[in-house]
Amino acid sequence: MMTIKPDLILIRFGEFTIKGRNRKQFERRLVEQVRRVVSPFKTVKLIQTFGRLYIELNEESYEAIAKELKHVFGIVSFSPVLRAEMELESIRERALELMLSCVPSPRTFKVSVRRVVKSFPHESQAMNHLVGGHVLRAMPELKVDVRNPEVELRLELQPEGAFLFTDVVPAAGGFPYGTNGKAMLMLSGGIDSPVAGYLAMRKGLEIEAIHFHSYPFTSDQAKEKVITLARRLCEISGVPMKLHLVSFTEIQTSFTQCNQDHLIITLMRRSMMRIAQKLAEKSGALGIVTGDSLGQVASQTLSSMNVIGRTVDLPLLRPLIMSDKQEIINLAEEIGTFATSILPYEDCCTLFVPKSPSTNPNLNVVMKVESFIPRLDEMIAEAVATTEEIVLRPGEQHEAEQAGQDDWF
Ligand code: ATP
Ligand code: MG
Image (cartoon, rainbow, N blue to C red; front, side):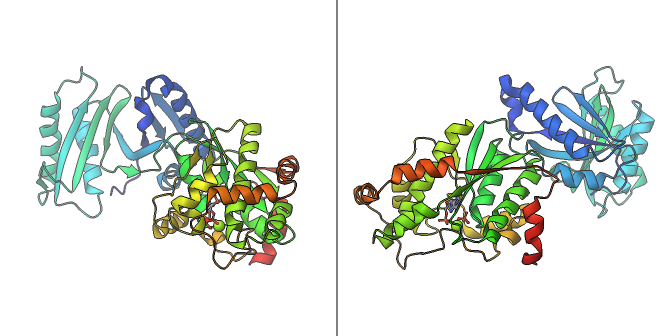
């Protein structure tokens, strides 16, 4: 790792660079996002060239900006870069400076040269020796290893300048936020759905969240918990996010009265889906994202998912479907939702949980039970109509959340 202050950060874009037609739009969004995260750092300057983005650091701290860049969707990796004059002596000097700053001090290295400026007097191969030889003379312990070097010293001769770097820092990857359309995220207070939302956003989906509550059976704190989770997602994307709060009390109560305890969760999920689809239509969203993970609980067997999914036409997106719980927990910790998710407030699905929920519900039976529930369609329409909508904005605290926080900690 290099330890001197870099002059610039070189940012590498993701997979979307190959998508031709959309590339311009992706780049614009990405630059917008980078501009947003660097906006508190007053002296930085963005330099945009073909397929590349540099941040000129000036007075600002590399570490502070790097921390932010790691979370920008669409950035695959970035490198702290030293700038040299476009002439051999300056390049040699800076190359040595960079190698001497590497911690731990490398035993082996190689030089790679990219000479975009063809007018530069030395060819790539020659530059390789001219720079490498200079470093080797000053660092006698160091050896060249072209196959598996501990450090790769890269030199790029670009029209914008001569750039040197050794580190490539991985970032979030994916697509810039909102460049792949919009979907509704079914956001419970659990561990999984915020992670599913994160993964969906990382793939460039704009997200609106939907949460079902059974107030007064579920508490205000349960609602605040979901607001906190949604807010965290919105902090990550850096873009305002809508949260739809749906009252599920009446529907849920009607299910508890039909003496089909083992089917309650299936019935609830089906109605949630219907409501989510209606809200999606209103919002112009083209998919529904859930935190389902295959086999995790009764409602997430293939058989249950089949019966639940039959209620809607929109694509159901389940980013965690093949992930194990521990992998999901690790991601939840990484994105900062885990501590909130494990707060103990009741979710509407943990209320009245049956002793043995069906893992293999029968579609015909479920539809029959639904047909006996009075006013189900009306209740669904009512739930949609009375949905409360909150807009969360990055960097602001929700009033209710502030009020609720004292109770939490
Ligand atoms: P999570 O950790 O996301 O709550 P879970 O393992 O507890 O998931 P379930 O409770 O079976 O699983 O929920 C499966 C998915 O259904 C959730 O990931 C979420 O997308 C959706 N869901 C469940 N309850 C709600 C709710 N109250 N509001 C919105 N979506 C919900
Ligand atoms: Mg849950």
